[in-house]
Length: 428
Image (cartoon, rainbow, N blue to C red; front, side, top):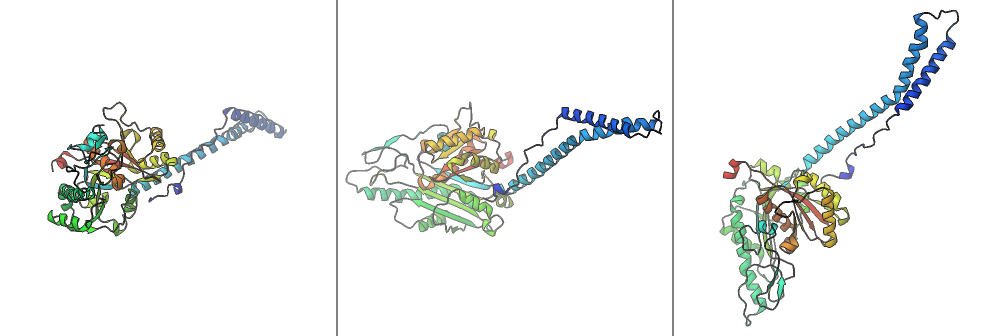
């Protein structure tokens, strides 16, 4: 995270104690009587008393001094209160400037999400509560499992189960890659040649035994896509990698676009797919917003800086995620969450309620989207599947989306905003 929130200057919320008017009146009367009496006792007897000087000394001077004594606490109170307000104004401007500088989001230039649902608007339909995860029979008809998988060829008893799964994955993976890359081809080739493109490619297909990068390179070349380089990331990055990427905006390493390709496939016959799981293929084309604006690239959505925290500190993490996203709670009507158990989900919804996020109260589409229940666990793609779902759904329904993901140790929360385009841009 770019900012250590605990190191930011605090607000001074303790206003000074307001002086008591009654005590002020008592002080005034005591000082006035004491001053007038002292003036009378000290007035020289040889001087006349029926003169203006006498009345000034006996009445006017004690009156002014008494008023000053009674007003001193009020003057101190007003000065302290003014100093506190001035400090808070300067502090708020400073903190606002810090957050504005560090709240530059990641621009989503392209998003393709393929799930085993035969629908052109699968994510929107899932968000609307259609296509719920239900049990289906595996190709060998031996079990009914609540899981999703891409179309599988017919299985006969004489087939070897491992060969069946291997052939299915061998045919399916190139098809998914070609489908996603072809859909993103206009956006990939729209990147300027001077902007490097890194491709982070991760596949979990247990029985796919061929080398992945040469397979992907062949498809890439056949589609005539621009030059790229493979990322050196050894494992699938989680969304907190966006935090590190945003922190590197002053470094030359931030000057690139990233295409994240994730594919999760399962065996179906040699071993049953995990219950509550889904096969999925995701492609996300991203770059920092300032880079996208400098090169005048078309942006679909903004993925704001994620915030990480434990279940016990979800409310604080959510509050900071909303600040990073610049999203008033009342503007957020949809929450996409995955990986939370029953206790974690209760803590998340409690934090959402505390922050006064309405979640589409009274609207036809529910505002809470439990991805594990609607689609299934996406395996290695689970972290980014939640972001992809929120991004695609935002294109249909609009408005900022809140994304929450628990990886078993930490919770990550972020805000995804669709980019509002002008009618001229929409026609281009």
